[in-house]
Length: 146
Image 1 (tube, rainbow, N blue to C red):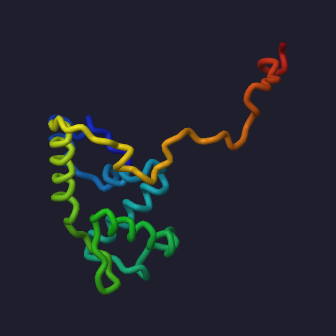
Image 2: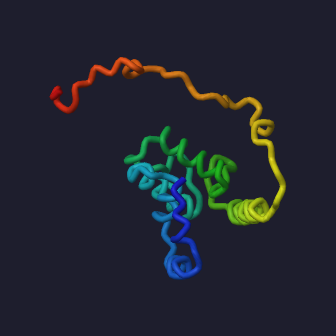
């Protein structure tokens, strides 16, 4: 996710919210321009009264459209009922709750044992899996110059 926090601070947000665009929302979720375009296209079609997979434009493959639409359902922007993808508002309240939880964590003084919380995580450094062997640097510099 590419949330640029300064764009959503008070002053810039007040200007942006006057003219909201799906392109801005799509850029939050996708860094790739093509992915953001496809997501924005599908979201705008769903906003117009629901979208069925058979109504997806020919420029977007149906399997790709299903993947993007299911992602939108997963993050709470759409709902999928009776084979129709429709706009829903399951996003704003949980996001506010996440922000409140993060703020509460920042304000708390409790000590946490991270290694217990993530007991299954690999905590040691990974072994080298490829590339040059360490200690045997035979590089003579740029373009073979010694």
